[in-house]
Each structure stands twice: as structure tokens, then as C-alpha cells.
Image (tube, rainbow, N blue to C red; front, side, top):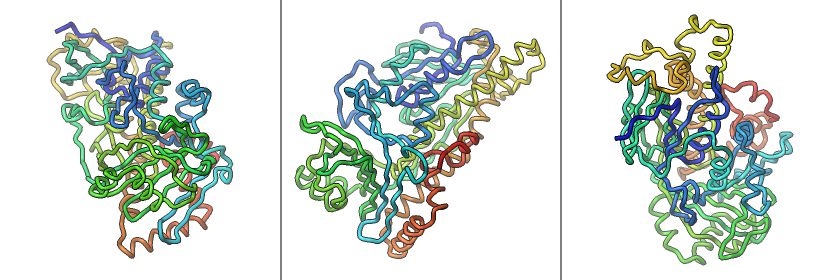
Length: 472
């Protein structure tokens, strides 16, 4: 086995969350006498793969489309990722904004219309492909080490560091381990982070469509007897025909048995079924892309931090796509972690400048084995870790991150889960209740404002000064 390389932070998972986090930590967190944290990003996917596929979730070729909430767009900009730069990958075409949202319940009176201008904001968010966003983030910096394709075979937590072993035989030691692997690797179990899984017995079918009428920056969330149906404005190419302002990315959630039936239909029969569920708000559906599907469950880590380890994004929680909250919640995980590390590094730098480091508290980012109860069988290796005086994995830092994420995480998970169970239920009293709720919401300005504030990312969150600046 190769000798262990020492870095401040190792991130496992090279999707958009891990890639943005690596960039932000390397560029924005600067302890005293350091240009930034030393960061290594490890990913199992092959960055050389270029062929796009609806069944391949390689982050560089993933054809899925996501809606970024307004706050997420702003957070990415703060981290040096301007979505306007995505246009360089698409012949100058900017990611479409969402300016109008329509929420409806098929066959019932419940209807909610939201217009961004009513809240003095230009848009509720933007729609972008995951692969385009990942390529933008990956190409925006070379300030961290990138190892791919590589699989982590084992992680071992020591008192003052975590050892990470790769399938190549290479070994790394790090002060802070971040799991951003979507929860697929099973590494969370190795570090004592357990998860609960609540199967919704539903499947999400994802695809793109072209419609007869232009989208005009409108997004739709339509609740049907089989489950929610979301249309997001997004101009894709289908059968060598490029949409021109009349494209949508669609997520159709149905029960698992129904998904098998739908995906077995001919294209014309599938379009007919889709048209029946969605209606003719956009005129006729002209064409549909290849279909992909994945099962839906609420997966939640019981805690987001353990000894020298934190989880972010889908590794911390995987949500139902209803209301489009999962990815945005994951981005708030990483922005919180960056903020926590920034604050601790800045405090350490201030203490170092005044020559008062001997009085600095161990729980402010300084190395202190007294913070941990684990036995240290390899103490002699701890002094080889980079930036040895600043400890990115100190107990106070991981615990501050966990505490900071609690309210936002619990509230967003509860909101999403409640929507799933309320709007996927055809029990008559529930149907009546949700339609009354939609009608009431549409007529109560303060309730609409609160709803908009949460779904744009400015609900209950530790970043209160940014909440106060939210136009809505």
C-alpha cells in the first residue's frame, strides 16, 4: 500500500454537491498562514465518459434537470458559480427562469397561481441540467485534488484523523471526511451514521417534452390520481429537433405498478396518457424523449455528523421530488458547512495574529484529542496532517454543522413528506381537505408569502441576515 497522503478535507462523491463543496472549501476557507484548506475530491464515476444517457447517472453525463430555488442560485453565485456561464455550454442559451408557478389538483377546484413579480423578485428560481452544472463547477477551479475513477474501500476513524483507503491501494489521512456520495456506497454505516428508509411505493418517470405552446417561464405542479406531475421549462433536443421556448423537463410520479405499465407503452400511447393527466395547458404534447425511472423513498440519516465526519446532500437525506426541495436542501447543507468552517478559520486566524493561540479554546477549530473518546492507535501519524494547527474536523465544527442544519432539514423533510402523503391520497376527506387548503392559500396573501419564502429557500435557516434580505 502506498504511504498515506495528508489533507485537511476529503470529500467522497463527485456529483454537483461534492464538486461545489470542494471548490468552495479550497477557495474560501483560509486559516492563518494558509491560502486555503487542502481538499481532495474522490469520485467513482469516470470523468472521461462523454456519452449521455437517461439511465446513466454519471454526474458529467446525467441528463436529469433540476429547479434551483432562488436562494440556491444566489448561494452558487457567492461560491463563484454564475449560472449565466452555463450558457457557454449551450450556444449562449441561458438556463430558463421560473417566473410563474401553477399548482392544480386534477378533477377538482383547488388551484394556486404564483407570479414572481407579485413578490418583487425577478424569478422563483432557474432550471438547469445536472451535467451542465457539474461541468461548470468542475471546470471553475483547479484548487483541489481530484481522484477519479476511484472507489473507497474502507474508512477508519482515529482520534486525530480519518484514514481513507482506495481500491488503487492509495491511502489518505484527513482531519474531516465529508460523505457526498448520495448514500449509495454504504460508507455511512462504517462511520456510525445510521439511516431510516420509508418506501413510498412510487416511481419517478423522468423525460423531456416539446409542447405546442411556448412555456413563457411557467412551471407546473399537477396532482393526479396516480401522483404528482411536474413540468419545468427547459428546452431540450428530441429526435434531432431543438425546442425553441416550448420545451419542458417532466417528472411524473406514479405508483410502482403503474410506472411499469406506462413505460411499456408506445410513444404515441404514452403521450396520450400524459396529455390526459396534464391537460392542454400547453396545447398538445408534440414529442417526448426517452424515459428513465427510479424508485422513491424518504431516506434520512439519523444524524448528519459523527467523529470527524459529516454527510451532505442525498447522503444526508433523499427526498421525494414533489415541490423540488431535495437538491436545494442539499445545497444548503454544503453552504452551511462552508460557513461554519469559514467562521472557525477566521477566528483561528485572528487569534494567531494577536499571538494568543495558546489561549484559544480547543472547540474553535484547534486540534485537541481531548474532544474525542476514541482510542488513538496511530497517534504518530496525526502530526503529518496538513494545516496541523487548524483542525477542520474538530468536534465543535462537526457539531455546529449538525446543530445548524437541524431546523431547516427537519422542516423541509416534514413539508415534502406531508405533501406526498396528502396529494398522493384519493381518500375523499383528504381530497376535500387539500383542495380547501389550495383555495385558502390562493386567497391568503400572507400564507402565500410564507409558502414562497420557504420554497425559494428563505425559510427557517441559520443564515438569518440573508433571510431578512429576501424580497419575498
